Length: 390
Image (cartoon, rainbow, N blue to C red; front, side, top):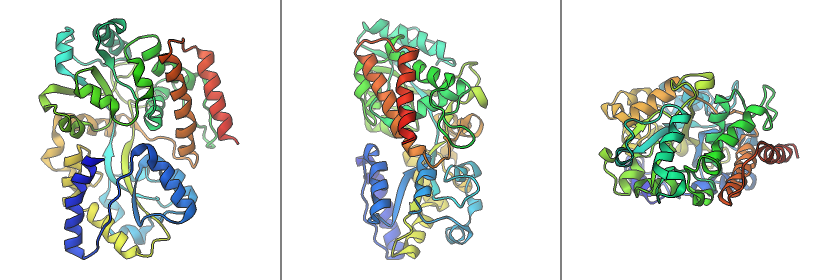
């Protein structure tokens, strides 16, 4: 949060100087953001402009509270065509005007501590899950070494969903059918969630304390040399803020069953990112559009995405040499070739809450030393599916 404020404040001052429009910045913790936005859609007491996780776009679109990005509104900020198509596709349900515009594009990668790998005699990052478990066990030594192979954030509902969704794709499962109805209890969905939680329960490569971790706590452990690997979206800024040098860590694609990322069962990331939205009831639509135009201008896209370690969704900004660094190349290749969007259904935010909580409860069971059986996983997902239908 402090980093966001530090990065954004000078850019907002630049906008105010150019336009005379003052922007009041509030940085909301990720864990609270969705509930804050949903409350604002109900009360009508929201800000003019807000950042949203792109996976929430269809859910927030369904509330009717956000300004639709029709041709007129897109033209006011430079046109729809300036954005990468896949980034716009994750800004709302298909066939409807998007509810937001892309600001930062992200994907997941595997970050690994080079020294910890070298000390354990591991020559290269894992490409398959079997390799990741084997590498993690060399480091954690069944929980006896004082160090751990992999980090997780059991209390971070969105992160739980992101990992379960990708593993679900690898098991041939989606969490919704073509009609948008939940299919949380399919064999593939159950297997995906079990595989993820078993990294702690069975494989012993995740520390039990991670069951309660919230946003960025796993990155802190990684930066301190307590954990050798994390699955995360752009993390370079966080690592640098915690004292790591770029030479301390490496970046590789998230593992897939075959070791070669791609589509279908070789998907290894959701299409991640941050979008900007405008509340429909704003009393300053012109100023809000001017601000979005500024934030999505080529020059600002270079500055902001470079600083946050993200990929610009604005085509002209992607050409900058800064986005060809090794870690960003992994993220860019993943977005281009092996990422899939989370379901663009109105119930997506409820999916994150219900299934994310089910996985959080399973982490607690694993931390307590309980076996994570298929039956237990299915019962938790059954409860989540029933909550969706209420």
